[in-house]
Amino acid sequence: MQLEKGHRYGLKIQYMRGSVGTKLVWMNRISDPIAEAVAAAKQVDVVVAVVGITSKLEGEEMQVDVPGFKGGDRTSLDLPKEEEDLLEALKGTGKPLIVILMNGSALSVNWANEHADAILDAWYSGEEGGTAIAQTLAGVNNPAGRLR
Image (cartoon, rainbow, N blue to C red; front, side, top):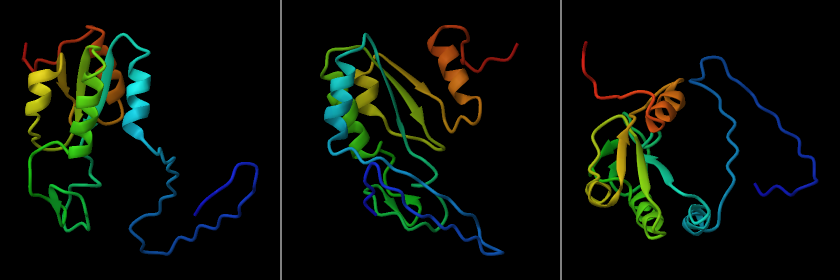
């Protein structure tokens, strides 16, 4: 549905008893997301790129039509191609590149390993994930996983 600025649109949401769940999702489409990301990256000192996979790509018996996934299963451990293309374009700006990985399973990130200045594997980090990632980037904590 194409919505236009300044117009009002009626919206009716019906929930049926026994439904798995109901979502209303608003997606702002970007015609050339890589060009927009590169333009933004040129304005900063350090690029922090958050990439990975989500539970919308990986899960039991899902209808997913993305290379590297079939029926909710992974057919490749590689980072999705669009995301690797994004990382390559961002690194092309000459700015330091920090890669934050969001995922629930193993990812092959060979290109990032060879070219990024830092990689933080945040997994599916939950409610306080943003805080933990920010504190890690700021040097407030060290997520090395050691027991004391």
